[in-house]
Amino acid sequence: MIDSGRLYENLHQKGIRFFSGVPDSLMKDFLQYLQEHAVPGEHIITANEGLAIALASGYHFRTGRIPLVYLQNSGLGNIINPLSSLADPEMYAVPMLLLIGWRGMSGKKDEPQHQKMGRITIPMLEAMEVPYYLLSDQEEELFDTIQTAITKAADCSCPVALLVPGNIFTPYTALNAEKDFFSLGREEVIREIINRFSGTEKLICTTGKTGREFYELNKEAGNKFTNYLLCAGAMGHAGHIALGVSADHTSTILLDGDGALLMHLGGLTTIAPFAAGDFFHIVLNNGQHESVGGQPTAGFSADLCGLAAAAGYSNTVLIQTDEELKQWLATAPSQKGLHFVEIRIKQGSRQNLGRPAGVPMEWKNDFMNAIQKNLIEYSTTIEGRGEFVPNQFLYSGQGRKKNIPDQRESL
Ligand SMILES: Cc1ncc(C[n+]2csc(CCOP(=O)(O)OP(=O)(O)O)c2C)c(N)n1
Image 1 (cartoon, rainbow, N blue to C red):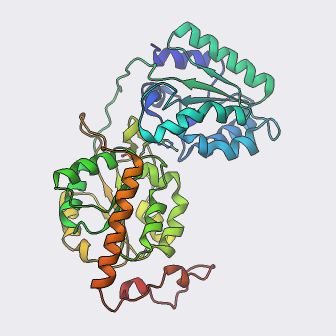
Image 2: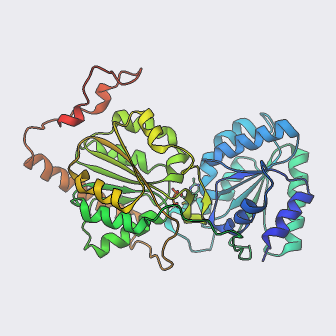
Image 3: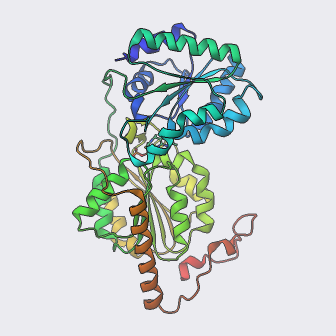
């Protein structure tokens, strides 16, 4: 097993002095060490993996040194563009190390969202013409491989991948356990949402533990919600799934995470003008990537409600206490229109959190069947609404027309 401190020292000795990326649970011990020991300016967590490639390129342009970008292999999709059109030897030829957590590695059982990417990780690197090496869990061997990769990156002036085949790091305990600033827990909030809303809303859950918690708590509530879909993979895309399904004009609840929201933050500017029906974009903001080890996000330093309002959300609310949550939930289910709700929560989740039963195809079919049924019931029971007018007809292309009333209010 690899000691995180010794790896950090070894990288330092070899001239690697800049680290950036999006965390992965396979590297959580090393990343926690890095978070605590990197000197200021040496380590920056980016909102998505592609941005880390660009940041690392900028670092290289300034210093001439080789940076390291870390990511889960699910982030490969996010780096293809900057890798091929920025860092590639046929473009600006940026030597860098890519430390990639290999989820779904061939032969290893993993969650459904990791299977395909696990299988195609090597073919993808090959297609991208990125040299790669598999890391050992033996220190000496691993240090040798890193040296080989650095030499390769310098020689070819190109990105070189180092694949992390599993949890190869010895457990690292944080020096200073982060203090909790907020008292609400994620499960508590999800439970209240399940209790207070009718259960007929369509509900889309973000990547990570939120979906698993929703699944458990909904089961405990006798499967009150039937119209739900867990966005098990595709981090940062739950918002646009919700946007896509909102167009049937029944109510939509989106349970988002701060890390996921920030990963594709620009999506707010499309959800705001196009979301149909009553749409509750609820961000469970714990200021960290809790599902993969608790590394910080900008969730507590950015003004998420301000960002949403600037993107065009007509109603925003910040909830920080149990009282505020109860107060909001007392009226929320009957509120109309588009809502952005930031709920600040503490860290942590239960140890024995289960995983949803079944396979993604079944989840999809269940969801589609449930919302079709819902739609039929809806159109036969609600009179007067008729054909809905999608919000895009209100969108001029140069911004929302100010003199057109928000028709969602009157629907
Ligand atoms: C593109 C991509 N990069 C990284 C990951 C790994 N990953 C899974 S969940 C997660 C953290 C999500 O953070 P947040 O949305 O704040 O939710 P939390 O885990 O705090 O509940 C990460 C980084 C991923 N699934 N996809």
